[in-house]
Image 1 (cartoon, helix red, strand yellow):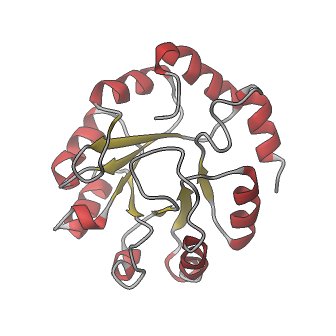
Image 2: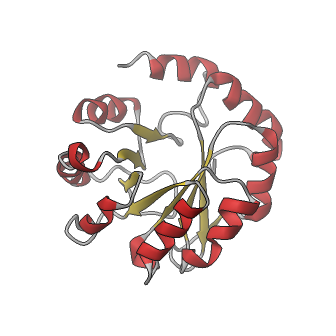
Length: 210
C-alpha cells in the first residue's frame, strides 16, 4: 500500500477491494532498519477500518518484538513479517505472534543466506523474500535472488510454509516465479499501481496468468 495514492485513500482501498485483491500489504518502516519512513499506526488504522480483507504487516523496523501486541491486538494485522536481522530474540517474537492467533513470517533481504534462517522454518507460516533492497519502491529486480527462491522452494514439502516475493514484481516475474513454486506476490508499481488500466482489469488479467 505504500504505492497507493494516499490523497484518495478511501477510493484506493475500495477499488482494490472490488478488484479482488487477496490481502493488503502494509510496509512499516522506521528510518533506522531501512533508510526510509513509511506507513505508520494511523495509516494502518485507516486501512483496517476501510476493508474486511486480511492485512499483513511487514515490519521493517528495529526490535519488532516490542510492537507485536500493537500490530496483532490493537491494529488487527492478520500476518506479521519480521526481519531476523532486526530482532535479537526472533524465536520469541515469532512465538508471540502465534500466541495472538496470527500467522507469523520472516522477511529476508537479498543478502540473507538460507543457512542463517533455516532453523526458523520450523516455526513460520510464511516467508517473504525481498527481491530488491528493502526501503524504496521502483528498484530493479535482483536476478540472483531467483536462485535463492528455487532453493527455498525445496524446503516447502518438509515445512509447509508459503513463499511470497516482494520487489519489482512484474507480469513476467509473476509468470516465471509462479512456475517455480512461489505462492504469493506483493504488487507495486511494476504490475498494479500508476497504470492506465483500472485495478479491476489488471487483477483480472493477473489472475488469468496461471
